[in-house]
Length: 188
Image (cartoon, rainbow, N blue to C red):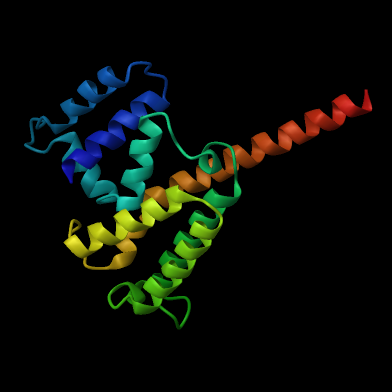
């Protein structure tokens, strides 16, 4: 999954203002080259935040291609929901409650039933992207593409939670600012 780290670096470079996606990929590929200590930047990043989830990789590819879902580009509700779900998952795994949601990922019958309900709602509401994300996550988990056998690790990761929290704050601020500007225009 070192190539996932390269994709993350490329996305960060374009997010920070690098205009050319090809140059960003080429620069990010340099992250694979070993440093004098024998560890590459990609390996160090993998050690820092681990492997990204399959969901994060899918959303990263969509964002990098310039076709991120509108709910993530402009809305705040979906990012908040993902961030809160991730936060509840990690908080329960750390032990402040008697329930450990992370443990459900090892025998995910209940989790799969909940995701099945989410998939039905997405299908009913005509949201194929959600269906594709869930289907690819499920296929990747069954194929064992990640080192972890926990289904939660296919769905969520701390980096995704952080990005979703940042998107929720940014998009919520923008929505509030636009609403404030519209009220000022109407009053004028």
